[in-house]
Image 1 (cartoon, rainbow, N blue to C red):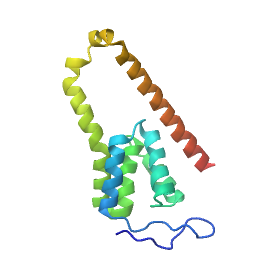
Image 2: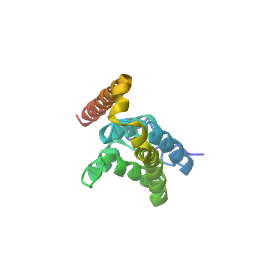
Image 3: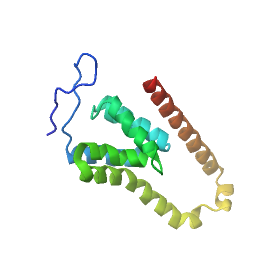
Image 4: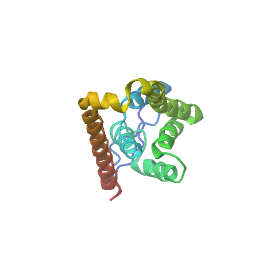
Length: 160
């Protein structure tokens, strides 16, 4: 069972940070995020901030911001690096591998399945016959834009 400590990042010291996080805690949160996170790196980082800083209190806002700054300097999507970094800060390399893999594998599985079967179901003729499919794709794009905007606003408010 994970323990609470008296370490705090607020001014009066009343809200403790959760220092001891188990591999089970990492697995539970990252497998769920891996299957449900949507909107790209900006939305993912916003979700990480809300989950691991505000709700679960795994780290202070300052530590999260520093990790994010480092991840921005690395090639590739910042959410990929953040998923590994969050687990690494709690359980070392094994925690980082666990969090990173659990966050990344759902997208890899789904994209592989789509790629292997797209020729059978995603041709232009199929979309012309089923106009609702074009509407669905447009709606998903709009939802993605809304999620990225929400994450950007959240990060902006935290920064200022």
